[in-house]
Length: 258
View 1 (cartoon, rainbow, N blue to C red):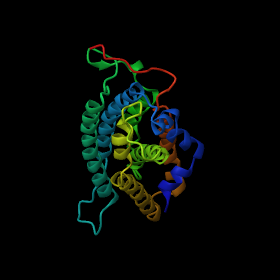
View 2: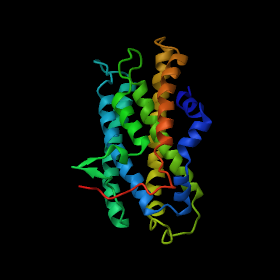
View 3: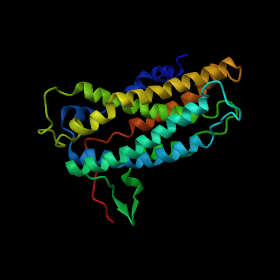
């Protein structure tokens, strides 16, 4: 079964808009300013917070057999993936801070009394905050589906977006002439496109495929029913991803107020 792959192929134009943007084009050309990169990273750091809460939400509804199974269940596979995701995201936060310090990038959005102002956030961040806080968990059949698709969709878009940037980089440059001082070329892009991340994203796609196939084979639901549920989440993520890339015609980033 290629359930996850069918999701990726379901809306080619929507996927293109989610994974290609003027911001990414500038990143590949070395013309993305520190201002725009800082603004995007600041939003991405807050996205991480919602991601963590979403992982906890999905972990809380996973089902595990009370007797020892012959093989890993879908719940087991998702638990392993999510715990790895949380470890990865912890390292990512530290990586953001050390890399931002090295390249003199800002990681804070405008705030008042320590709280980021809503209008300072990208529209895509607002969408992700709602998605991670409210994805469906009450379905009797395959209750993990919406949450797993949410995580797969956002990670798959992230991987493909930055892989496209990596493939478009002009070879032989050291980043010293880049507008961001080489932060993207030398640090962020390699981190977001390495083999470990590719395997991590693919593993969730495989887990979704296995879990859906098991549910369909057991007669618990039809593939059509499950795909309808999955696409409802998938399409929301594509819109959130599309709105997560900064408008390169505006200077969006400012210092924090307090």
